[in-house]
Amino acid sequence: MKTAIETLNALEKFNIQHCEEPIARWDYLKLRRLRKKSPIPIMADESCCDHHDARRLIDLEACDLLNVKLGKSSGILNAKKIISIAEKSKMKMQVGAFMESRLGITAAAHLALCSKNIIYCDFDTPLMFTTDPISGGIKYRDKGVVEVPETPGLGASIDDTILDRLEKVIT
Image 1 (cartoon, rainbow, N blue to C red):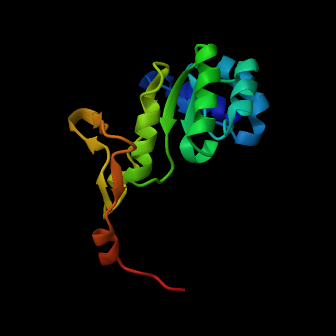
Image 2: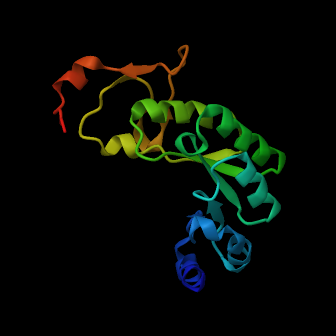
């Protein structure tokens, strides 16, 4: 924790919006103390997998924000439970992701639109892929704008013709 506090204090001059999970997730009981010593807002990420974690972190005053991920929360229903708890506590949130395709990020983008307390989105992972096998779905626009389809369901699907052209690895 000492290293995290020193690092956060050294980074203060750079006007950083927030720091995600600056200590190991299992050490979450130290987050409150770290938060009080940090000039940078603390976002709980790995330590917030479900609504029980969200409630505990909020009750402990351990963080300024929560990062909600569909993959971490086991889907939309559980993610909505986290969001509901955060809203009741007036906590701001980010919707993030792991290494989902544009299909998964499209679902996350729809989730991000469900609450005014979601003020950050981390939807860049599909931009790192060399091949995009998704048809429809979100579109990336200039200056970080993400456009979400207004069709039933996600408005995205897997394009089998692209999948068929990809290298196959058989073990």
